[in-house]
Amino acid sequence: MMSRKTGDAICTWKYLGQFKKLGVCAVVVLFLWYSMVPTPSMVPIWDLQDEKEEDLSGKIVIFAATNFFSAPFTNSNFQECNLNLRNACSISSHRAHFSQANAVLFHSRNINSKEISSFPFPRRQEIPYVMVAYESPYNAKLETYKDFFNWTMSYRIDSDVFAPYGGLLRNSELVKVNYAKIWRSKTKGTLWLVSNNNVNNKRKKIVEKLIENGMKVDLYGKVYNREPDNCPRDGAQEGCDERFQSPYKFVIAFENSNCKDYVTEKFWRKAEQYKMVPIVMSRKIYKDLGIPDNMYIAVDDFKTLKEFVEFIENLTSNEKEYMKYHKWREEFRIAEANQEIFGFCDLCQKLMDFQNRTIPKKSYSSLIAWHNEENCDNSFVDRYL
Ligand SMILES: *[C@@H]1O[C@H](CO)[C@@H](O)[C@H](O)[C@H]1NC(C)=O
Ligand SMILES: *[C@@H]1O[C@H](CO)[C@@H](O)[C@H](O)[C@H]1NC(C)=O
Ligand SMILES: *[C@@H]1O[C@H](CO)[C@@H](O)[C@H](O)[C@H]1NC(C)=O
Image 1 (cartoon, rainbow, N blue to C red):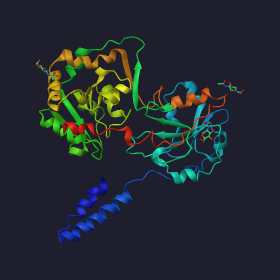
Image 2 (image 1 turned 90 degrees about the horizontal axis):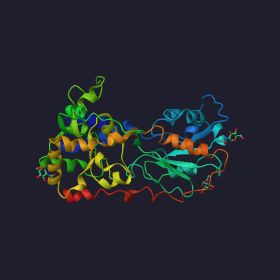
Image 3 (image 1 turned 135 degrees about the vertical axis):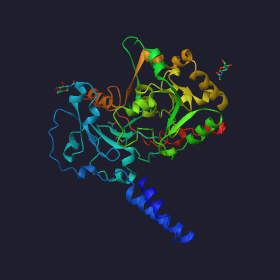
């Protein structure tokens, strides 16, 4: 973002002719773009490891062959696991630990085929090589890694290790929900806080169409160049996010693409932390994940946007009906990624289960078909536009 701004400033040089100006701008913007936007690390990190080799004997060692975006995979991933798992598993990228590893991790955004083919360690047939993919297929294309990966670890429910951004845990007994208190706190309508407009599913267009159809939405975020009052992104006061967001009854929780099982923290955190009812595009994605129907409202339940807007309008002023969308709180609570049941804890548990047995052989000849844009449907919005 910063690079763009700097580029714009330079572009206001008045004495350049129109044509020259455009050319210079393009060059400057491109240059700044390339020099300032961080690219995910592609460096083979095992060569960079110079810290002291830790003694991991007796541990389940997970060898991280790549970084996770710009930072290494670390043991903090096990922080929320139960004590048993926390003590059992350890992540390392130290060259010396490869031979005792119980699994090898590769993050989709940090590798390409070339690097895979130059992976310097001899194949260890008896342990799983794991493809970690947290992003939608639009943002992480999986290349042809032929007969290389044994397991997948991602937000997809059919992954070998299911690592969603969040999920529901069933309460051991029904929880008493203070509905009156929630309703009293809900003094505002619908919020959309959006920072990224570089998306695949026309989410901005559909929000604007909703507004055209009479929906009242408070628009905030980088896309609208509008920061919440008294709650700027930098230097915000403690609790200000909560004060800003919690009064809203609804939040638009459109993802950047509509892909199978792709539900991110946008959805989970807003429902949990700020007790808002998420508005999503397509019910099917959420239903497939087993999320209760009355936890959210889907645009595609309605034939027209007009009907949808009227429905929201009706709910806004109808306490009894609105509260139905909070009833799930009696039965469930939300857990976000990193918590006990998800991702790394499951990976650790699964490897532990295999500790004294050989792992049943499994391998993917290719992951392209599993993780590509055909698993997404961004077109359905077109029928509303
Ligand atoms: C909204 O409420 C009105 C009045 O109760 C009702 O006639 C209408 O069908 C409702 N609209 C929707 C979309 O639920
Ligand atoms: C695996 O075997 C080791 C050594 O025989 C033993 O100490 C350990 O308790 C076993 N672990 C499990 C999970 O059975
Ligand atoms: C992993 O996949 C490779 C390549 O297909 C295969 O040779 C190996 O036996 C597999 N290992 C496991 C533990 O599944």
